[in-house]
Length: 353
Image 1: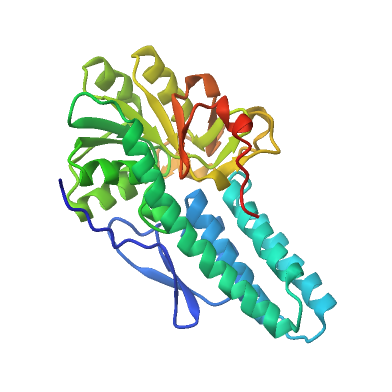
Image 2: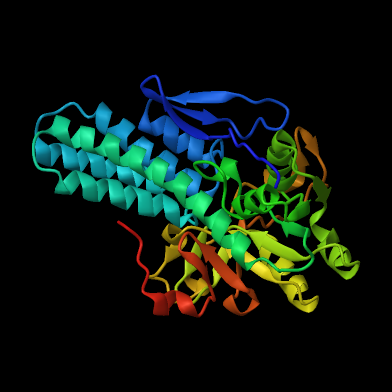
């Protein structure tokens, strides 16, 4: 058994404000940004200072409380109307990550159901945000252990491939896909993690490898287009990725490049797992074709840092996510266990809203 201690928490309530790890500065600089206002939280989410669906949900919950704290009134109806404006601001930041909308809805529900003064509503909102934070950490630890139970039994020490970053940095801590990796490492079942670099923002290269190095987990970085070659060479035993939104039929939206990874895993008969909390399942969407796909600034693909890498006159297309069809997914690993995609709707497992 290998010990593993995780001390990476990207969203922390500290000194009456929210401290966020600035993920845009990693891996070269480990720095925090202190957030005091809902507008600043919205900007932090939009600019990916905080990113990863569960972490965005936690940050948005605190953002709702920060916005509530800014509303100076004792009139309940006026307060709730202004709080709804805060919710609309935060919802507008990232369209694909369903945890964002789930957390905001939970905060609004708490506000409307709290009887009493405006100050009592504000206190309820703060307590609800903290609960969402703690629950997500516990959920990720459960996902890690549930995932460990369904990984291939042989070889004894596995080599796992992941895409993007679904680790502690993308959650309240521990991670979803990297939660499975952490649990495998803890129990002596992991030989090595292979991490796709994940173009164009390089979350795999910058964030996933950084997390592994912090904990001494053996990690090998590859470019996105090396995955098929590595599989053909017998270097990969399983693929584990996260998700930003999962439809009721099991179609899963994740960082762009996940779909092609699932295709090559299928071609090489390698199990492909999606690890995500039940709050990531959008039961209102029948299939992945209805998942909104965020398109980001094209500068992410036409320049690296301040250096332009394309000639003028080129057109650009920069979707941030793609959707992996359910038939390519071996199982969806949740905090309640691993489910075949077809079992999601039948399970009637509902998010706590």
